[in-house]
Image (cartoon, rainbow, N blue to C red; front, side):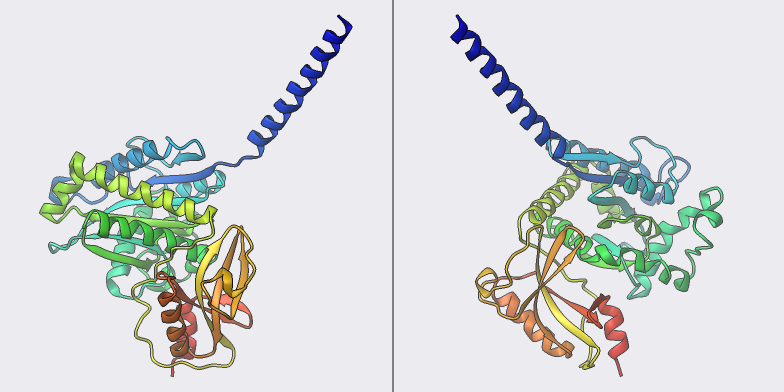
Length: 365
């Protein structure tokens, strides 16, 4: 009898110990937080091309993306709005920041006076052409519907390119990851759904400026195009576009958790003339990982001269180092030939990472 009591006591202690391990693991496991932002809403209908309503289409697709993501127990979805209500742009950013989000995805539909069509994804950055500025200006003009917008946005003027340029530095820390996600979304739009690829571009969207995490703004297509507007307004179109976005988010999450970085380049940083300078160094980013890998050639498909930089929770890996942009383009091609098909060029000044566009501007003669 005494032996049985001892066995029961030992069993009880084992159960308590195992329970404490399980509880500790559950508490310490942080979910991957995705904030989904349906553009416009309430008194702001967005564009009304062909009689369709951007605010409703964006909301339906956001809810569909969220419903699919919520099936994954390791993902937490936060919505800036789940109904047809008006939300200030700066509030959308606050929602994402308060949630300590890993990603912010804002969904919109485009418009144009022509029959332009196709899907594009934007990250925060400089306007490389007038078209990008006009797209951002349309979306940013929403602030005029907000109360105290001058106070909340410190005199920001959506109609002024100079004003927009002033907001760009805040997201530079997350630009690489934003480009990565944007590229995955565009790949699904273009290759899986066969939509016209308007590529990954940079523009000064104020809603992206408000966030402190990797952030993208998706323009699903043009409601002003008769065929595309009908597609985006249909159940089939909304289902397909939402699945493409959901799959891209899952692929991004997987690539961060492993040690593979599938990046895309911004389509407009091309065709620059030879630039050589002593204080600016160019490298080729080939991968990003949540784990620290030894910078040995056997970890990088035989590539040598590998360097590593930690930014936030990510380790980023670079191939080569040269003062010549043209030489770096050769290194980029070498990396692509080794299988790093989405590698891209980055710039450093005095050992600190700077925007590639700024490096090219400062070295142009």
